[in-house]
Image (cartoon, rainbow, N blue to C red; front, side, top):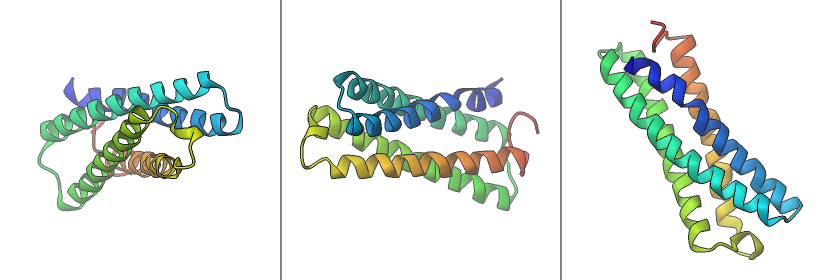
Length: 142
């Protein structure tokens, strides 16, 4: 049961984070306060989902322990990129919380860089997770 929770849960933060980033880009092209609030809400929910995904991933790895050295390296890279994603998204969410009109200011560059980094980390961490499941057969199907 515990091994199935991580793959079932992790799709939500991926979708929420990418949606939040896409809505932010859309807001920059067409400034509508609803878009910006929706983007922020999706990022907050995505951050919480990422935290839950990391927790369930750690439990799933512990349940399936031990791993071969090669597989463990891939798991460590997946975990590292996931924690980096949690950090970068958390920084962006805090920056936006402290400065609600951030996207209307000239100093929005740091926020946008954090969102771009988060998007990259979503893709890399997701690819690593897919490699673990489909190539290395780690997870509920193994």
